[in-house]
Structures are given as structure tokens and as C-alpha cells.
Amino acid sequence: MGEPFDCAKCSESLYGRKYIQTDSGPYCVPCYDNTFANTCAECQQLIGHDSRELFYEDRHFHEGCFRCCRCQRSLADEPFTCQDNELLCNDCYCSAFSSQCSACGETVMPGSRKLEYGGQTWHEQCFLCSGCEQPLGSRSFVPDKGAHYCVPCYENKFAPRCARCSKTLTQGGVTYRDQPWHRECLVCTGCETPLAGQQFTSRDDDPYCVACFGELFAPKCSSCKRPITGLGGGKYVSFEDRHWHHSCFSCARCSTSLVGQGFVPEGDQVLCQSCSQAAP
Image 1 (spheres, helix red, strand yellow):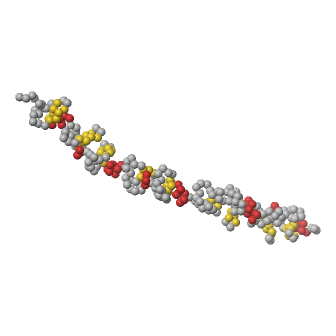
Image 2 (image 1 turned 180 degrees about the vertical axis):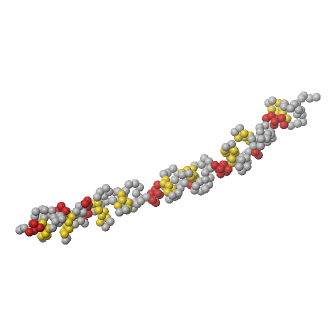
Image 3 (image 1 turned 120 degrees about the vertical axis):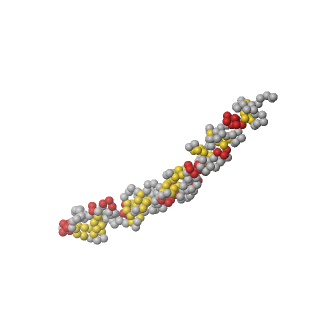
């Protein structure tokens, strides 16, 4: 009789039977599987020696059990993600946990470049200026009623324009006749002196500094010959085609103020009633 050749586990003879050799001796197939095989994390059955075994972290699976927990697609040769201890194919993971691009409606894949604003998400290449349709990327932008504009497009579309040069006012400016002006554009029509912050008036909608308006358009005082502008609360007196500053309207002889008093014109002069009755 030959030398014994038995299973190291059950001691049954292995002559004429399939066996598996290990460092600790030969095992019949059932004993080998019961001793060394891993349990499938999905079906809880042993993964036999003749089965393809797949594992993830500390879990082992039959090839047929290594599937997406939602769509049951095999993950043996597919990229996958583990979420809350569940294995998911990329499609199911993106549908369940990834954002949708607010522009194109497609999934924003994990790890891809994206932009988020106001609770919405965009692919980087889909976040465009509503004006020039160029990608906004990391540039500054201005939101307006659901649209997004780069700064130049927003200024061109919405910023007020100067009544003189028609260019946009990005900051500052002054208002004249209910229209916006650059401070440097609001100048005297006569001498081009800047008028912002200065007292000025207008003629036919054109602005003039006080000096130019007086020289060009204001009547001249019959006494001092200087312009009567009426600006700054200045009062004047008119008689026929002649005009006087209040301070200049006085008797030509005694210099008594005639404002609110009776007077008598005499040639180019005006006299108080006393002087008009006195002998010259």
C-alpha cells in the first residue's frame, strides 16, 4: 500500500481527487474553500477558488455581485464611486449627487472645473457674459435680473451716458437739466471753465459761467455799466429800456437811493423828487 495522501483538514484521501496545495499541506476543494475563501459582501456566499474575485477596501465580491447598487450595471471594468458604503457607477453617482449646469443642463462631473453663484452651478465654459457671450471665468461680473455681464458690457448697456460726450459715467459725475455729465465735460460754453461746484446759468440750454453770461447776454447797468445778471439774489430796477443795480439806482445829484421811491427821469439821469424841483 502506498504512502498516505490525505486532506490536511478532513483527512480524506486525495487519491484520484482534485486538490489544492498550500504551505500547510494539500486540501480537498470543499475544505480549501471553507478554510480560505472569502465571503462575498453582496450575496454572503463563499467565493470559490474557481471564481473571479474582486475586492474594494476590505470587502470582497463575486465578479457577478460587483454591481452598481442602483442600476445593477457591472462595475468589474467600470469606474465607480462609493457613497455611504454603496457602490455606484459614474452615471448613477452624477445623477444622484452632482449638480446640473444651469446653462446647458448637463451634469457637472466631479473634479471638473465649475463656477457656483447664487445657488447655481455652471461648467466653466458655460458661464458666459450675457452681452459679449465670452466666458467670465475669474473676471468680475455684474448680475442683473438673472443675467450676468462682464463689467465693460454692463457699463455699455446700463451705465448712464454723459450728455456732452455720450461716453459712460462709471463713477462720480454731475447732473444738469436732469441729465448726467462728466465733471470735466460740464464747462462754460464761452470760456470752457469747469462749472461743477460753481454758480452758473444757461442760455438756449448751453451752460455759461456768470462772467461770460454777463458779458454776452446780460443788460448793462446804466450807472456803473457792469452786467446785471440777477444771479446770487442780485436785484435790479428797470425803467423803459434802462436798467440799474439796486445799489446803483440813486439820484444823480444827491446820491439818495431811489429804490422804492418816486423819481424823475432827466435825460440820461434820474433824480429824486427834491432834486428835480430844485434849481439846477
